[in-house]
Image (cartoon, rainbow, N blue to C red; front, side):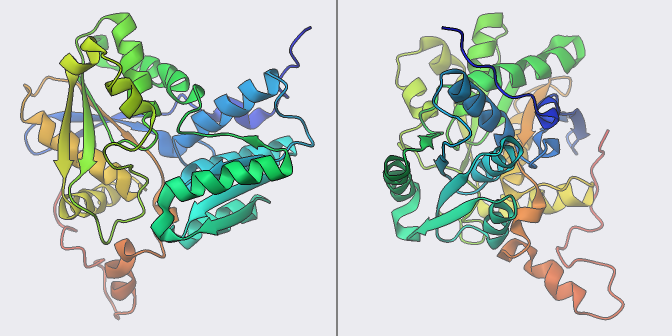
Length: 332
């Protein structure tokens, strides 16, 4: 029996193929940044959302009457809410309390429903409730932490980067770990192509207080990344390392990226901070790549914007108060 084709919606053609731009840092290195913030919903999660829905549709798991359910700290749920609104599907998100209000507002603006679990339950509690909800409603549970499309869609991400880099030289890739789909998918692509590229996880050091809502999962959390790392993959073990990033470093680099005109969320600050630290291990000619995962608008109500809110109440001020307004990087 022929598989039903996924509905044609124009917005799907705008997912992926995001710009890759260099930012020159004080050491002389250029950090190449994949601007996933320019996907339709504003984050890298558009790739997963599209891949998961398309595959589920082709397998007959989703139809117009099928509710779509997901546990998410925000970005995956926003991406799914946008696509479900385009497809005429009903979407329900389960989110741990503590996520920024903007995320909930955005999901609801796209017509989705939001249910929260206690912050103390975290993503494990959200996943448990989402699974129950999918069973109760006979819905499709996306299950981003286990959905095989997570890593698969990022083969394309890696391909786009590889093709765009000067001389197609890919020395290192730096990314945080949420589900792990990005970093696993990129490594799988590179392993197939043969470049000896180092894969580096940007890991928050100690619990963040101001940036508690950035979508990173702790070590040992069941995810694509942890399963891949533990699969006795010798090639991965030989090219993998981690860099810890303090909250102060993450905030500092997030602010600096804003002043360069990059409207990023703090997870991108974590990634960029780790990429800058890694650059010291390479010659200035090396191509170090990282990813800007989501947009700043999701964090307006958080402590990250407190200095800017305070500055906006002062008469005749031209500085946001972040103490780096006059520092510069070269966005070229």
